[in-house]
Image 1 (tube, one colour):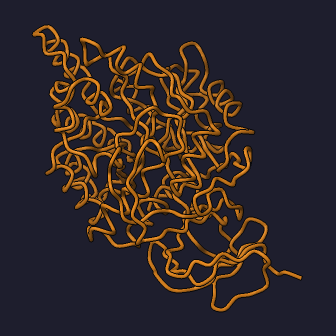
Image 2 (cartoon, one colour):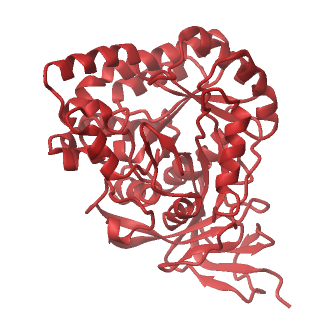
Length: 460
């Protein structure tokens, strides 16, 4: 009689701190043994020559989302299939509170969208757009119920002011949560954008001009200072510039609990992508904008120094037709966002590990372990250890692939990574002991993914 449900044989096990050759045994959705020459399973996967890692965790996605005058193309089945094909075993999505509705109501709506469809596990990090007494009062119970991270914007129609922000930081921290912040000086951006459009400068190449590095730096520094005033933790999302990250670095040298995220696109692309016709440039209209090569290298350096903790996708699969329709004659109307959940693991591994910028251990740290820590999932997820969920990514470090919309699994009609050549590719994704993606085929069951109640944030 088999002792185990699955044994992954002979791979190089990579964790955030170690690397060694071993077999990994799985039973009842958990890792139950890691050792040599294990046997006692009918299901054996030969991982010789491959890397066996904790599954990727992407804590910044926008699946099945109405936003910016458009609606993303993927539902929770398609979006999580795409994630799994990119080595991801858990996502944390950002439901946005709707006008006139409670935070709890939008979470209930997102549950109805995801449950029965997702093929991998999921959580929700609500975006608080209505800073009412009712919203503030909801926060303690939401954190207790497993929504331990939340988000606000210092930009767009729902931008938060300093009074609201310091109060929210205080409440979230007092109850064991972590507040993520989109940091841009929106008033300055609004002025610059209106001026550019009035001057007839309406092409996408003016998108980064309207949202300069200094707007990100100013808001980042302000958010850090406000968190410091209440002695709280703060999470700065999708950092794009070396100068803004330096504000995080300075704060961390003072022992402030500041945590930082960057995204795949900032680690690969450069701002020349905007110097194209609308049909191409609109693909890259995201916020903050893609920056210069010096910023890209500065972000990689900050990953190595530990000042950037995670890399997320900020996946947001708006249809290209909406980007072109809304952005015709005015770059400010182009919906901000691009698909990326499937490309995150191969791009970051290829640009990072294969090109010698980071170690395999650092890769696991920024793709899986630290996202789990920030999201309140660790050590249930984010590591390969006895007792952890059997969420496992098997990656072939020698496999070379040219990324293309035609080979990806999201229903999006474009990818910002079209034609990008990567070395190192996930060949199998296992969620709680079940294969979701295996040797070029989607084998996961619709509805396998479950909501994960996340614990309170623990500083690290």
